[in-house]
Length: 580
Ligand SMILES: Nc1ncnc2c1ncn2[C@@H]1O[C@H](COP(=O)(O)OP(=O)(O)OP(=O)(O)O)[C@@H](O)[C@H]1O
Image 1: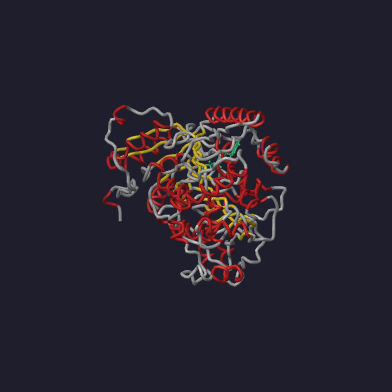
Image 2: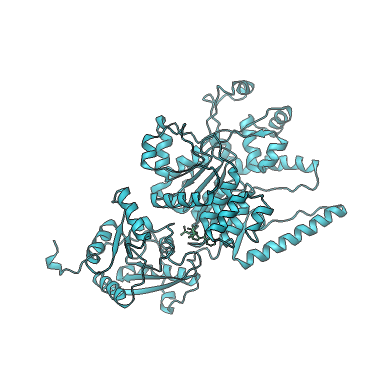
């Protein structure tokens, strides 16, 4: 788990040649930035103190002009739901407006309570009552509504009810909602609505997924939702990476793993440039502001305004225009993307998407504190949306723990459960590639159609295994954690944790491959002596998801859970002396 949030503290390179005139104005004052870069670090470092003052000052100015305007703070966590401003000397019209606002707030609260939605942030937009509001409130194009009907989606899920209006209002968002609860649609739909039309400006939407399988699935879902439009939605494949000149690639939305996109950004020949700077129309008012606020140049002014005002206010009052490229960035399974193994690559991509008007969103079924910290530091006036209990799994999954005693005991228990009731399609998770192959070796001679997937297989092999499982050609799929998150196999009835998961988050995601979209699922977790110290953490998840747990489990001491990868005996029914 990483706390490093370096991408937030990195800046944007300015095209000094292109804006030579503007730079000339500041030459004398900007002694130290000879390379044309913003003195980003020091600037951002003081944003919590100086910039806050600046914003208050900017906001005071605005307030003087129109009394009814609200003072917007920019701390995500300063308040819970929206807090209406009390207006002194209110006119009758203003009072009526206020009453209507209060009534709306009450309606929002009731709706959120009904669907278990918890929000933090300033002026959080009202949740959707139904999909029809996408049209009445946001002027959603008819092809998008038709696609919802075609997909058979009648009602928005709770995360869709809240996250879609947040993103459509141009707010950044970090969200946690149970596995299988429709988060993909919650970020893809507003992206399609926001981007409106395909354009020649290059890639405007980027979705990062932690595995190729999830990226491929998300691309497919995205295309389904965009049917009837001319959006070009591309999956970053190995071929694309090798053979494409991205400056010529017609693409509006790119779905990729962080690794592939980073490779692309860092390889000069590929010329993929996701960054663009927003420049303001330079006028006297801005000049004045710079001096009044004690800033050094218009870049600093821009960041101040941008970070603390809504983009609409910036664009009308301060005549800011956007020459943006990536307008929309999604980090799906965000906590995974921020883990040590992917952090650097994710960091590069986020850094490259340097359009200051960008709307970024983080989605996952688990939201550890360090991700909240990242979101709080990096995002602009973001809204946090949590559906259900923060540490819970999906409530539609029946969860069971089985003591298997030893490795041999696990294999016996598995075969016994197959003999009693094989309920395919079924996923079995193990902790390593080696163990996946071992278990596959044991089961392939039983009369079960079994497949295996892990990261040592070629991309083609992985695709074939997934296709066979989706098509029902294999009933049981043995997998490492490469399939533990995000994958949507609609009919999976049962997940078996053959090996105990390495952390509570991994447990939540693994078992969440069943019980999707409101269906009933089952999760069985084998444990041995080695795993007992970690049982309590799983018990906590079970309790939070409404499952019954034996009292002895609750009485167990809590254990701080780092990654749990015990050395396990190999999976084999051969007598020990016959093993090689
Ligand atoms: N409004 C809806 N009504 C019915 N089904 C829906 C709706 N929205 C999405 N779904 C379906 O729910 C299933 C799960 O959706 P999705 O894969 O987006 O879940 P998720 O929340 O991203 O899960 P995970 O955390 O495991 O990634 C999909 O099969 C999707 O088609």
